[in-house]
Length: 40
Image (tube, rainbow, N blue to C red; front, side, top):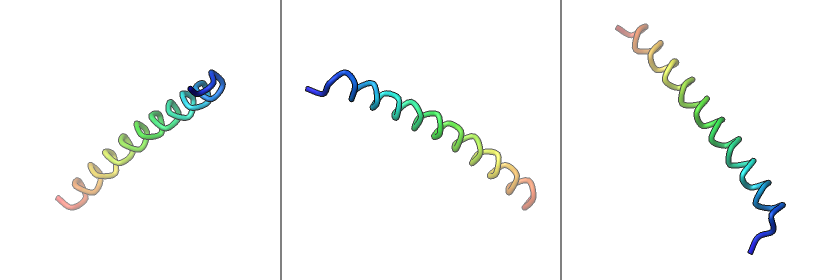
């Protein structure tokens, strides 16, 4: 079994990964909307 310290570190890293994923999805959606607006 992993120690509690390793689990805490892994949970922090996963939380940061999820927050970056959410930010990336929002930015991608905004850029896509901008490109569609410019093309049409």
